[in-house]
Length: 549
Image (cartoon, rainbow, N blue to C red; front, top):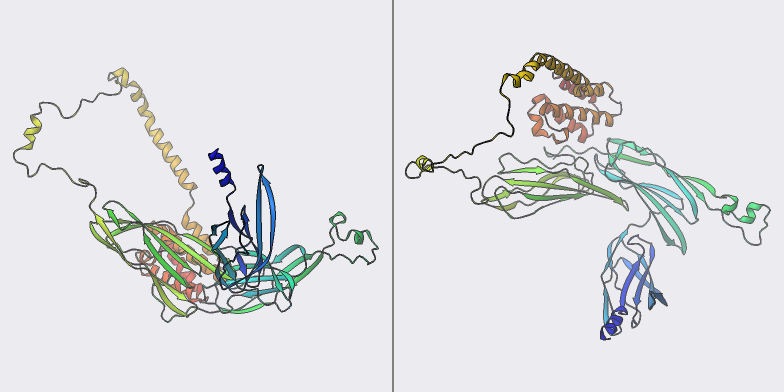
């Protein structure tokens, strides 16, 4: 009986819950927030602490009884309106409420608030760029904003052509829909955000984007005349759709993509444009010789990381490294582009003692300060202890007194065991007849093998022939033309070095001679210097390199 009584008390113990529909808002957006007290009697209206970028207003209180599994539960609900007033990350809570003499709590909830929708000046659609004077290689976000106070049954959009830009290859375009209140009127806002990478220097224009919307037909007033069946049904789906289609266009956006400055450019600059942070964390601070540790290297920022690679480690560093392929993620939200690259680097020490792993340094260009800078990590000290006892030692009789061979002979028995064949072979002439008969056919088998091998070789595709065909059909567009030239050069260099093309760097190319180094530097200058001139001369250099001249 006592056990049943305790179970009934536990079954009806008071509990607390906090419900909010959205945790990502924009300035001006309002969402409901509900606090539910189940099987308890709170004292007064709960006070909910919120961050300075949020505004909370109490709306009312309700109570209901719910029967579940033959048990009645009483729920007291407090409803609030949560409004976003400032951009940033803010907390709702934590909650600490006195219910029936006991304190109930709830963990804080993080609310992320983005910038308010841009003022459209009464226009239904608006297109913006986060920066109309970006640097070459910088990521900008094109935002299409559609605001309406009428319901729609369908929206289609036609994106503009983004001349001078290439699509960011990791992040996808983001779409969002939310409601705001302006001048006591409800509006629905839809946004589409596209991350772009500046790729061609000079003035340009983003042409208008097109929105085609089908607005739901507004119903007639009750005292209005209805002359047709369509009017009687008021646009009901029973008689088909009476949606009103309208097309809206954005204004063109003039822009100018600036080249990266030559002054102060580091020799090992790899093309990272943006603001970044770099971290390196080891999996252990102590290990034994022969074991390995893992470095987790994280690079975060607001620039594209497509094709990112870590700097190489010198051969005399005292350890070997093996890098996994970078795990690159990126997203765009509320006109903000964020990217991250995570690299797992295995480190294998080569000797016992204190191993110093130098910090990693990566040069970048910061568009905000318009200067080159370097992000770096601190060096790490790792203690390398000897491996397992006897590991790597070689046994020897040297240094022992007397002749050790006599000790072996004194055993009076063979050291090697007697080996017994798995099966007996017939060593007579009759047993050798099949082999003797097969000897005349041996030249024929060799000839057939050579023929088949030659046929297989003829079926293989010559990789150099593929690159020659690509050079014969170079596009006229400077951006695409430069991309193909760089790809052809890296493929040919990789074939000659016997390494994958993505792993090539300046050190590897230097082993191919001065001509290869000059082409490598010229491609880097063309890529990050923004110069589209001289591509014909660069194509001629790549062609000669392809032919081995």
